[in-house]
Amino acid sequence: MSDTGHHKDQKTRRHGAVALTLVGLVAAMTGLAFAAVPLYRMFCQATGYGGVPQRAERAPEQGLDRSVRIRFDANVDHALPWSFAPVERLIEVKIGETALAFFKATNRSDAPVTGSAIFNVVPERAARYFNKIECFCFKEQTLAAGASMEMPVTFFIDPKIVDDGDTKNISEITLSYTFYRTGKEAGLAARSAGNSGL
Image 1 (cartoon, one colour):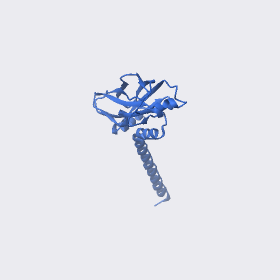
Image 2 (spheres, helix red, strand yellow):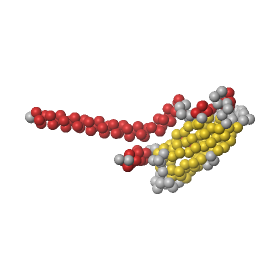
Image 3 (cartoon, helix red, strand yellow):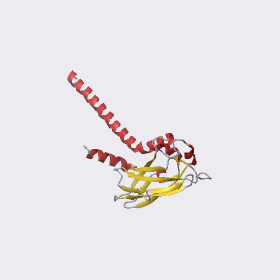
Image 4 (tube, one colour):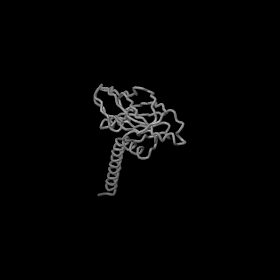
């Protein structure tokens, strides 16, 4: 074989290796896109980063004779064809007492869609005292085509909030949710959105 033919073979092998590496990189990035929401949620719950509320089994035995306004905020990622909003935007709760709120989601597409919610609390310093007992955000939610569902969240504000110099004067807390598409469709939607931007 001539030197020219040998160099062509080496060049072809190098191009093949580069192409294979790029395909692997795209596959890894797609895998990370699927895992991003659950990984972010686990990180925030473990560290309290970003104003993530705590989880609890039940409210304390005794509450306080003091109330806090709880404001609810709802957002939906563009890849999820849902409408999503709190049933009530603002409620007043006694510190230490169990409270119940509802959010309503509607699937505006013609196929079943699965979503998962991430959440945070503002001001962030209040997050360690905002405890959830039950929440739709603890697991993925699937809505049939055109279906609507009311989703509950049960929570309480830890009475220790009044013993903390940074939080004792807080009179309003915002609980915010953002729903993202999950499952196989999430990757397809992400690729479709990426292609449309080209």
